[in-house]
Image (cartoon, rainbow, N blue to C red; front, top):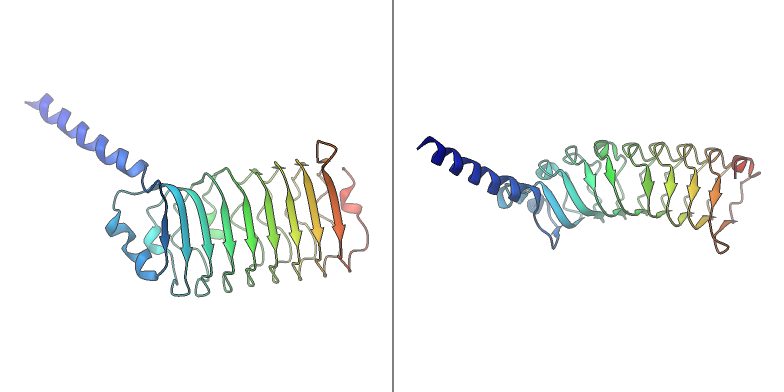
Length: 239
C-alpha cells in the first residue's frame, strides 16, 4: 500500500504545483483594496500570473494581499493616488512583459521590486508626480523600449544602473526636475531612436558616457529639443 499512497501524494502535489505555477492567463484587474485583500483567498495557489495584471483605483492603499505572487505577464499600476509604495510585491522575481506606471500621484518608491531579475518588455512611466528615481530596478539589463514622461519630481535615473541595452526607442520628455542621466551609466546601445525633449531643468547629459550606439539603421537617430537649461552634450563622448 505504501507505493499507492506515495503515488497519490505525488499526484496531488503535482496538481497543486502546476496550479501554483500558472494561473489567470486572461489577466486580472484590481480596482479596490478589497480586491487586493481577497486575492489570496480567491486564488490560494496562484503565484505565477501569466496574464496582464492591472492595479487601478484611489481606494488602494497597499498591495500586501499580493505577497504570494512570484511572476506576472505584464504589470500596470495606474491612478492609485493612495499608494505610497509597492509593499506586497517583494516576492516578485519575474515580469515577462511590460512594467507600466501612470498617474500615481503619491508613489515615491519602487524599492519593493528589487527582487525582479527577469524582465522582457517595455518600461513606461508617465505622470507619477512624486517619483524621484528608479531605485529597485537595478537587476533589469535590457528593455524593449522606455518612455519616461511628465514625472515632475524625477531628478535622475538612479536605480537603472544594470540597464545595458534598449532594443528600440527611449523617450525622455517633460520631466521638469530632471538634472542628468546619472543612473544610466552602463547603457551601451539603443536600437533605434533616442528622444530628449522638453526637460526644462536638464543641465547635462552626464550618465550617458557609456553609450556607443543609437540606431543601427539609417533611420535611427538622436533628437534633443527644448531642453532650455542644457549647456552642452559632453556626456555623449563615447557615441
